[in-house]
Length: 355
Image 1: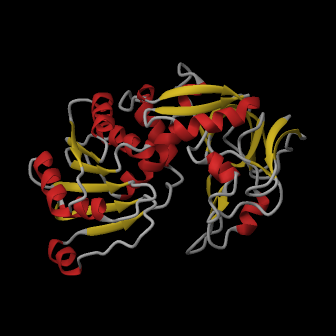
Image 2 (image 1 turned 30 degrees about the horizontal axis):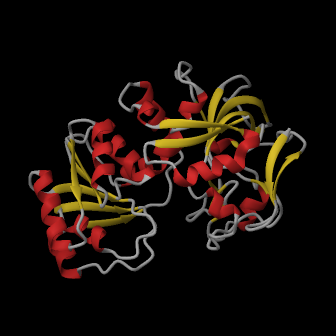
């Protein structure tokens, strides 16, 4: 088969002929139909993101994918060849211990997970992907949706993990900080799908905010942030019709915490703030204010193992419209061109590579 192999971050990336992986115990071999690209894949490949911990040996890059199961290994009892499935990069060690390590297959290892990534180094930018069974979820009932469009599931699954962590409930008011980013936009759409009575899309780009509101519908209100915490918190509260129940923070590489603090200050008593972005500075939390208001501040990395099943149910039930995110399709052999496109894609686009 063909696969995109990277020697190391900043090293050689080549489209190579490699053997199709042999299923092993607890694994699923998937014939890849579509794989979505992260916006920062080009920077990752070029070694400009040194905080990532990739496999020590050359490996196949790529994260989530849509495909059809081709074969399964021993100790796999329910998934069968011919069944359509989504492959997740996020993999938590299966040991029954208090703090199992986790990794993103084809990308990076978390703390203490280098040996996991050594066992499962290869991602999805190939004709076939071999994945641990825990990272494969069937896509029954979505046969009418093309694989290229289904690849948008990978855009939604990350913020879905954060909204599950924050216990977003139907009828609540949700604030999304960083709403004009790729994952922030997905969080706005998810908030509507999950039954939020009102979603406040907050960001610094008014035209991009308006595009999000058009895509998500009439329950969305927009707030163009100024960088003044008190002023922005007041604007969010006014858009909320009072105060919000939950704030979801998905800012990327922020150099100051002011928008996050404004989102926090917009919360009603016992409100929740979920942190899932990549802010580059510390968050100065107002201790006494947090205590007096009973606010919860929740960190979340990725998503639980059952999240894909629940996300698929939102699509199957007609609650989440995947078609709000438009795929731009590239051939597998055109990965370099696709990476350039992913780096500049809008928040309502997703770049997808297909073998």
